[in-house]
Length: 275
Image (tube, rainbow, N blue to C red; front, side, top):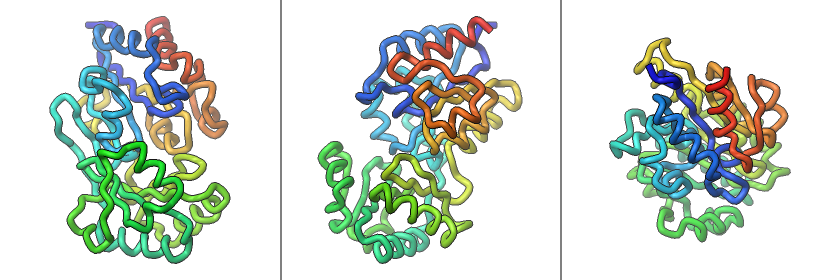
């Protein structure tokens, strides 16, 4: 039996696996290869759509060897086989009702959608939002602008609200109460609210798949830094965060290691090997 057999490491990307410039940390890459060569399973869990995750991690199909959680848990994607073992889409009528409410109550907010085809679909009006317009420039080849009348053609996995930080603190509790039981609302940045189907998050998706594949014969180490990682960290056998994590994240973690810039995953692999 290899030293890391039946051990799974799942990590968030931004602020955790990637450095502050959204680049790979070479020390992490070396540690991941060592971990895998000794029987370990390594993957990611991100709010990004599948193809945006691919863009963030070069040669992702070679780096990870276990299906990845994308769209904050609405999709589980196997990059090596180019297929999704798990998809949980948002009902179109509910999506339209939610977005119409957002446009009415928070006119300065912008809305975009994540789909299995990786594009962000937003209305022409939403594209004028200062945050979304920057994203359209950043990902020019993987965004589609569609009117809401065309949304019935999409498989919607996640809705994203881009909104000023001071308004987010008002909008998040209001939306959570109004649409309770229909959607899962998560603050994933100071200006971002992620919305998935009710009951769907990073933690439940990865844990469900692990139980189906291994039963109770695997140990899950989950790594995250922000509020949208909380459910995943709670589902883990060992919850891990970098030193730059939010205080609420640090409070529930079993391990707080080095910063994302220094190579959190490398620190974790060393810890697992020496425990």
